[in-house]
Image 1 (cartoon, rainbow, N blue to C red):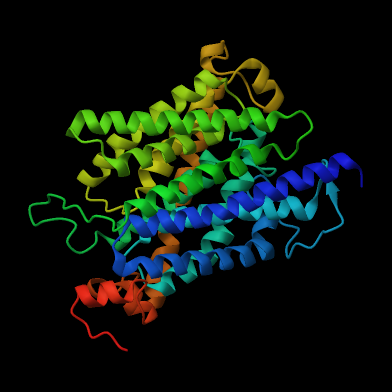
Image 2 (image 1 turned 60 degrees about the vertical axis):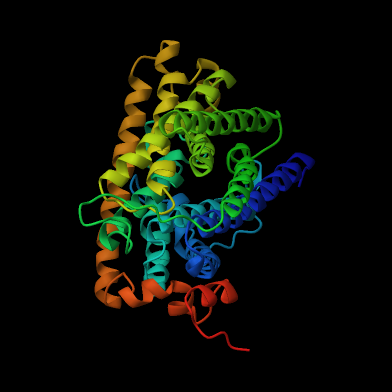
Length: 423
């Protein structure tokens, strides 16, 4: 095996580790954004559902995405074990691990819509079914030998494949689970159910920001021309612009520089640039991130008015920003980068509406498929486990105790709820 293949393999494994480390960022983000009585549950379910998604991806997920099949789904390479295969300058097992990490992130995004009220059994079953029948199908359409890939849809690292797919599953869950107890008053006005730790959320966002360099720059799958550095630059600029834009908009609206909104703005910038990071110039990355930061502020308010209780704001951060990020290549993709990475130049570079149309078709079809199939699967799961949602008493006590028998913060929570602390 020559030196360049080894260097590519090392870079992609490092990127894989960064993407898997993003699970830690999600643990802190989700636990900090919710109440302390559910913190241990959120942390634990992230670990065991990543384990489930890993096994399902090995068994069938990778084959459904990259196996030989048809325009809808792949039908080979199940129970992957091709350790000795080198394809396009990268050992097969290295590429497998990188793709597995992405599948795990999509599932974690989907579970944002379950937070603080879903049964653990619902998590378990949906982790299996989403990892087998939702994410791999959309990924095959765009990244495998699927019909959207044949139309040269541009989605370099997954604004549609990972983020929008996960967000649409989260939307199905929030609709079926209905709002948390106390979220809305009888007149329909919302209450703030504040997360218990902004420091956790901030650290989680920083970990995700760093992990995103593996997510986006790692998607170059090689180091030959140093292009991964350019992708990393665009990624960082968009995140920075999203954070600043969201902070300023929130400050202008409310008179307060709201920290959670600023953090969601950074994530929205990251999600938005994920599709376009290899297709646009740095100035466009700033614009894409900035618009993503603005959109997330208003979309959070919009979904709250619709009484869609989305505790982690998955719909706004990953859904709305994912749509915008995917469409952005249809506006800003340069002729040189489009030729290098696939597809046509954007509207602003004389490419007309052709690429923008493909992008719009891609987000529409992926969103509809992910939502409809997730909704059907969740309805079936609810029938099997006797409803997706825990009882009112269990929700009030907290999922830490009702589902696991112990609290993530035993002394603090038990003291607050007046429970006896065992010695």
